[in-house]
Length: 310
Picture 1: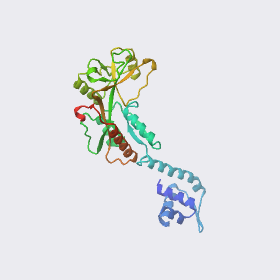
Picture 2: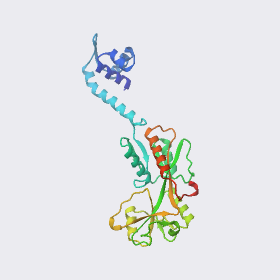
Picture 3: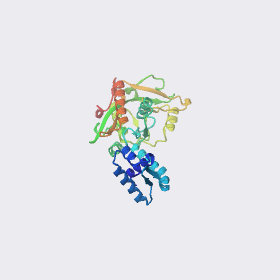
Picture 4: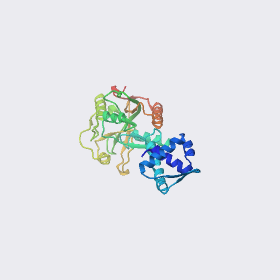
């Protein structure tokens, strides 16, 4: 059904005159008449009884009017769904408990009126995530871009916006449990346990970190979830794991787990936000500006990043 014809039908029904409807739609009276006549032919009914004083709805016209109005409302909703600035901004935050998610939430708290669609593509590698950006399935994602040393395919843009400092997480019986800070040299004496890691980006990053400082980082074995990991740490006098400063976890108070900053230098996990260059969504532009400003305000200090991120 021709929406222009439906729109003209509704306008004539509301004004009672073809000329008034034509004026509202910025078309000629002749064009308005042709549109309605075409709709009548399509439906096989008369919609208006025409008279010198105007046009009155027939019984069929009265039956059609509420449905015609709903058609126009549906068309408006469909247009709004794909109009930049009116549809929800779709952002992949990798995981609900880590820095990208927390930064997006902080941004949302500053602008609570915006529409967001928050997704987690935790098991999708960086090239596949960038394909999703290129295809318009996502507006933004976060990746370290280790394999490409920060470069992205043509048509995409990337900006490094997160340097997530590391902490170690240990139970109360661990030898480092009472330390205020811990150095990478001290960590060389203690195994770091990070089971279930499958994404090539973090695996590669932790291999770089281990090789640079002589650490033992075990990523082998299945993951049964962070709850089981925390329970194991709470009971262990030997195991530790890395947690980034920007991550937020909750565990039972009885576990008495300790988060200890790693210093001299502080290793940071670098993440870039990636988006399509021609994406005109105004919320995306504001979000990227927010991330850049926050990064500039917090970056610096004695930190370590792998060679590919320098």
